[in-house]
Image (cartoon, rainbow, N blue to C red; front, side, top):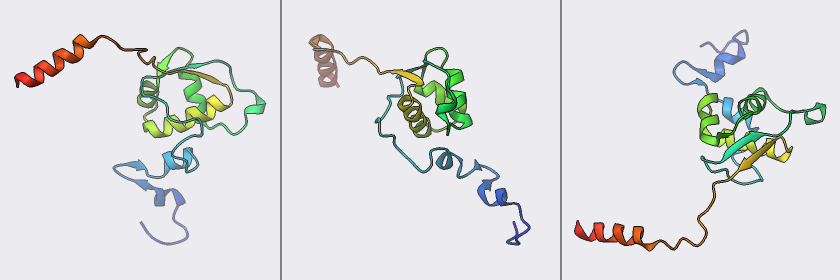
Length: 129
């Protein structure tokens, strides 16, 4: 790679083995978290409406998420299908959730987990070691 001004700018941001180096950072505009918080990797995402002209500023990755999530998909599945890091997907989901384009179903937390037999079996198993 030469330092001459005639070199294409993309040469500076591409690594032969890793691909585009700055891409996820650029897609999230430098954000590592969204104001809406974290999304669990097993949270289910579903598209609730298509973007309108009022939803300007969405990137192609946002649109890809909306197309994939026409049926419920987990955050992990979206990351795998789009070949993007989980953190990047989470930031973009926050953007979509803020615009009310998606519904995110968080995993249910067990209310009043009282079945102690599982915990007792685990403790007994550990003691047997």
